[in-house]
Amino acid sequence: MAPQRVAVILEAGTTKVFATAADWPGWTRAGRTPEAALIALADYAERYAEVVKLAGQVPPTGDRLTVVETLVGDAATNFGAPGKVAEFDRKRLTDKEAQRRAALVDAAWQFLDLVSKASPSELRKGPRGGGRDRDKMLDHVLAAEVAYARAIGLKLKQPQVGDRAAIAAAREAIVAELRKGGADEHRWPRRYAAQRIAWHVLDHAWEMQDRRS
Image (tube, rainbow, N blue to C red; front, top):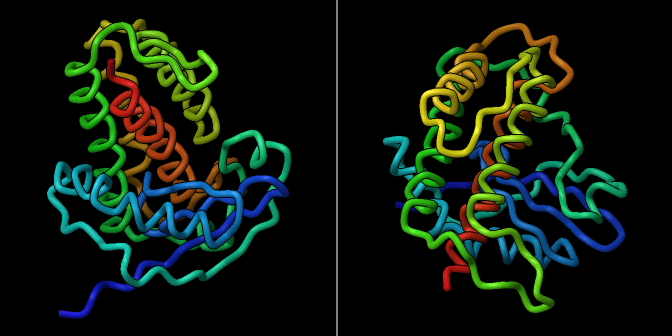
């Protein structure tokens, strides 16, 4: 069977480029050039497959990446966050597709939970001595999720790290909104919201894996 075609959106800043698999929330990688970003995206296909399997879906491969849209990035792109909403992200979602994408966001959270449980509280520092330790990283992810939730019309209180019930309730509220198809009038379209939320979760989950002492 021939490899599945994977549609990719590029967000190109002056110092950093993000490559995002348009139909696969969370599969986003960066490089200094479009070519480098696409190589990084392909390199992470196996790691992303672990997440897709948690969602009960068939993982894509990085063998047939096809750029379908290129966006001009800005300061946020150069800083390290994919912040542009593509025309692709404004396409109307069917209920089935919305539920599939929401399941991948939920799987990203499951993956982060598995990684954090297997990680020490103190993580190896980066090359310049930087980087958050495990619980500070988890707190940062929770804070970002509350901020992201506002962009899809939700007002949530940030849970504390370790408060499983509060974390589960906040994430269920987010994923319930992401499961909806049809009309979309939020500041962030649900396609983009699913992508941005899952990217941030997995970016830190993979960082945590890479920085285990």
